[in-house]
Length: 210
Ligand code: B16
Ligand code: MG
Image (cartoon, rainbow, N blue to C red; front, top):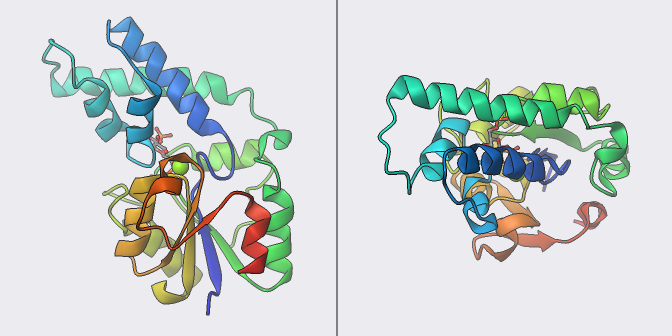
């Protein structure tokens, strides 16, 4: 019996996955590198530094650890500038109503995101206070597909993993949810075609029928 839903942020609550794409593309092109939508899909759910390694895969230049930190900071600065455009209307369709309806049914709701910008984004969406718990990039040392962020969210809720369901757009997130012993629900992104997903939804309100 499911007692809690743990939501991924980028690509599930809002379309910041598109801003991540634009920011990485800007950085990659400045470095003379190609950056495709397919490559962007490989970055879904994984940490900023791990994402940078994938962005630099085809680079002929060997960057030092210090230079890589600077490049990751540069991408984050481009991304944060794009975040200034986010307003409450930018939550994905049906998300605010579905979150409210889940709470009214005494379901716990949490965020499990690899992003260190999570609280800033939720504040801009006016959704910071609706969640019972938030586990994000500042709480973890290993990003998805490691289950750490979802286990952290369940711990903050005071619940066992087996009563939690994860809603994810990233295949890495589906893997993380299964590794945590949780129900894995795919919603968009490359999660939707992951054979390990327990369920696939196309609209958040479908969660109310589970
Ligand atoms: P930041 P999620 C993830 O968020 C993104 O999908 C991923 O593309 C990003 O690299 C990661 O957060 C870290 O984000 O640079 O903001 O700390 O999908 O787990 O909500
Ligand atoms: Mg995501």
